[in-house]
Every structure is written in structure tokens, then in C-alpha cells.
Length: 432
Ligand code: DI6
Ligand code: FE
Image (cartoon, rainbow, N blue to C red; front, side, top):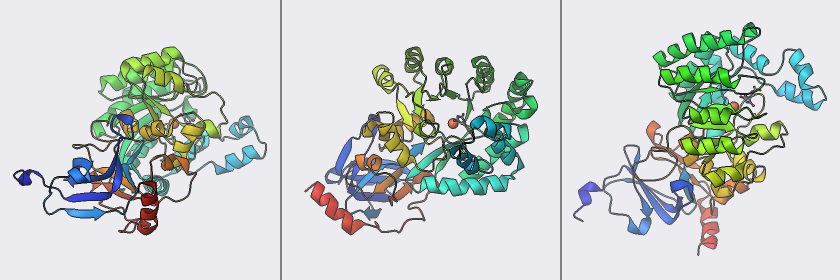
């Protein structure tokens, strides 16, 4: 054909239905095809319409679905120690207050994180990250916030950057030094805000250690006025902001974040209609975190109906952290987003693809399968996308292509579709 020269690809991916998630909808292409060149999707459509490509490597599946690589846009995966002992103590009837009086809670993680070397932080986080990635996650945000002194915060951020060089996923780094107050500043909380603004953030910016700045706006953490000081400095340095807001109480944090043009406001159980309106106006994404809701046995649900009414995109994330959400499965969060929060499976999947990407400022390049975007995608041995949300746990082997890291197929998976035979029977039954 005359256009043959224009249709060049390194690899073609065929034989599965392609769930593009364009505009946050399934937009399923039956018997679809993807063409990849230099790490980017160059063609997405029905196999029957595919132009003739040159000498590309062909990967032919026997059925199944291909989705965008999943995005976990809110994690605290780097930390020292763990809090399984406190979890057990609480279930044996010891109260939070008693545990805190014994030096437990978030400060026990701060102690363990301060004591850990960068190598130790990297290797313990790698173990957790591998579990998350094994479920088809290809983009992960990780926050600092358990160092709460300059050196330990920088060490956490450097650990995230180091991990990024050695895992088959795109990792983004967020400075959350404003997660709370270090014990040394218990009686001078604004002194810690001064350190963050005057010393830490300028250094983080100079070393390129963070892609965004976050804070925890809560009665037991920062006040809205303290958050505003951190955000003023972040803006002055040209760093995007996001906020833990309205998790345990209504503080007006979500509206404040929106006023600063935040990428996202996260948690939001106690968000008001005014918060939601402000977020809608600024295009701030609502990041919902059912793992923490579940573990804290919270009963106030985030206002999903208001987010829908005002057109605020909803992302879903693991909030993986040692205290309130020791979650290593984004697929479980998909199910919880539906069962606990009333999201639809399509909204949940959009929450870990296109809207998760938007919450990281990556919606132009990630989160859906469209020509021009990075070729981060996953093949699942499933008949339809709702199955990703429906099954509770269980290993769900997937084949991934993570373009920017040039891992055609992750090492954990066999090169052939592991369940091709079984799967093609299922798919054919579903779509004769
Ligand atoms: N919200 C939370 O639920 C966690 N941090 C945050 O900002 C709590 C973190 C912890 O307990 O370690
Ligand atoms: Fe969090």
C-alpha cells in the first residue's frame, strides 16, 4: 500500500479485546490491535482495520482483554519497620491512646524510618512494590513523610528515585514532609513548617527529588493555615500540590487545595458540597482511598454522588502505608471502591487508569490506550473488564508491556499467555 512507509512498528499486540478507557469509559474494541513504536502506541483499533505494518514483532493472544497499565496515584510504600504488632494489639483490646502513650502509631514508623539506611528503605519498599506491580500496576506515586527531619525526608525521596531506576514501572515521588509534626517540634509546630518552607522544599527542588508536594490537613496534623504556608512555597518553587483532606473531619482542606490548583484532594470522606464545587471548578481530582476507610472502620462515605453530579473525576488508590492501609493490592481497592463507596466497576477502573493518571498530571501521556500515549498496558486472562473488579483476591496472571522502561514483558511472567487454552474457551463462549 502507498502509505507502507508510514506504518512502522516495533511490536504488534493482537488477539484480545482492547479496553481503551478513553474518556474514562471502557470503550472496548472487540478483537483489537495495538502497535507500538519507540515506547509509544502508534495505532489502536480493530484488528480487521489494522494497516499493514512492516517487520514488527507479533504477540498474539488467544482471547482475553488488554487494559491500560494500572496507576496507583497515592502510596506511602517507603517506610521503616511495620505496624503489624499494633494491629494485633488493637484487636486484643489495647486502645489507640494506650498504643500512642507507649510511643506507637505514626511516630513508631518515624523512629524506624529514621533508623533505616537508604539501602534498607529501598529493599523493604521493593518487596512491597513488587507485590503491587504483579497485579498489572505500571505507574505508582510514592510519598515521603515518615522522616520528619531534613535528612530522613531527603533519604526517603532519594530511595524513591533509586527504586525508579530499577523497577518495571514509572514511579513518581511526592514530598510529604508536612505529614505531621516531629516530636522535636511538638511545642513549636510552626517551627517545622518554617524548616519545610525555608530549607527542605528548596533543597528538594534543587535536587529534583519530588514531582509534587503534599500535606495532611487534619485536626491531628496541619491546620489549613499551615497547609497554605507550605503550598505558597511549593507554588513559588513551581511544584504542583495535592492534599490529604477531609479524611477524619471537615476542615475545608479540599476547597483550599482546589484554590491552589491542586492536582488532587485525597480521602474526602467529610467533603462538603462547597468542597466538591471548588474541586470541579479547578479540575482537581478526587482520590478515594477505601483501604484506610476499611481499616479505620469509618462509616462516613466520600460523597460519590456529588462528585458525579459536579463532574469531578474520581481516582482510586491503595494509600499503602503501615498504619491505616497496609494494602498491597490495587485490585482489592477496585472491589472496595464499588462495594464500600458505591462506585460502578467502570468508574473504579477509570479511577486506576485515566483519572489516576490525571491525579498525577499524566493524563496526556498515561492512563488510556490511544495513539500517541506511552505503551503501558496489561493483558489479562479475563473475558470482560468488570472481572478485574469482581474477583476478590487470587492471583491473576497478566502480561505487561511497560514502554518507557523497555520491558516488553515483565520477568515474573512466562512469555506465553499462561492460560491461553483455558482462556480462549472462555472467551469464545462469551463472544461466539
Ligand atoms: N492519612 C492516613 O491515614 C495516614 N497518613 C495520612 O495522611 C496515617 C499514616 C500512619 O498511620 O502511618
Ligand atoms: Fe495517605
